[in-house]
Amino acid sequence: MAKTDSLFGATYQQSRQIFSLDNLKDGGGFGQAGRVELRYRVWILLSVGMFFSVMIWMFGSELGGMATDAAAHPGDVHYITNSCAIWMGRCSGFMVPVFKVWFVMFEAMLVINVLWPKPLPMQLLFVQVLMMVVMLPMLTIIILPLSLGGTLVSLGWLGAVVVVLLGVIFLVVQLMKGAQDTRVQLYGKTGTRQLNFGPFDYWTWRIGGGLLVVSLINGFTFRLGFPRPATSNFWTLLVGLVPIFYFALFALLIRALFAQIVSNFYLWKYGHLYQADYHISDKLWYGWLKAKHLAKRRAKQAGQS
Image (tube, rainbow, N blue to C red):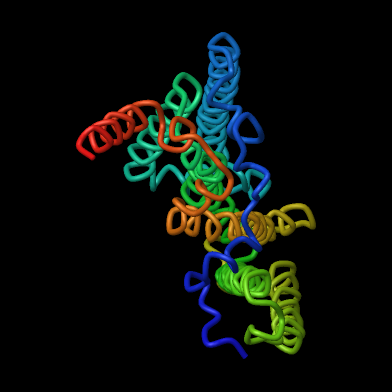
């Protein structure tokens, strides 16, 4: 058993087990991104920016249409998605400013990354940070509240609570599994505390699945805990399960980025060792401005000696 199996307590040699060393070469991997010609960067900026602008416009138009239809059909369960729009509209006072800040952050990151060469560590961080900036607010601030509104209307309070609990449990378990996988990469199986998720998964999904079945039966029969009286069918009840998939997507996204986040911590912690071992130039590692200052400092020190 190792003295420690902390995610952030590995030595330099251990950290090399999870780091993508092929990227630490001049002109290879992410390092080449700093030397792409300007016209290609502008093309990337325009294409990606236009895509997200169109997506945001379509989302706003659809939401407005849904709210209008919901107002015209206030008691019809077939307009369940429109009820979600009203649910979301009640939170718009908070969501709209957050969404605007998110959009400005995304565009700023995109412009900075595409138009100017950057130090190699910043390039390595860009992809995962961009994914988190784009995906997490969309899931947690926009899509998830919208789908939870549908869950409340289609499955009632019991179904909504069960769906949220299952989603949160799945998220926590996936994060724990991601942490364990990363520890195994760092320290090996013999130096890592192994957690057995088998019994936990077995009982969680059976108990949660049983409660979901009870919620579905309740939706077709007694309809206890529903926000308003209405009839249900198979498709409207199926909408209530949508948040589970978004929780799963959120968890798998975080788990996929887990090892990258840890490895980039070691990139920051042992950066000078990586740079020395793989002969990476100061310009690529620090950026041209800091590399220029380092060159002047070294020249001054050489002159004094």
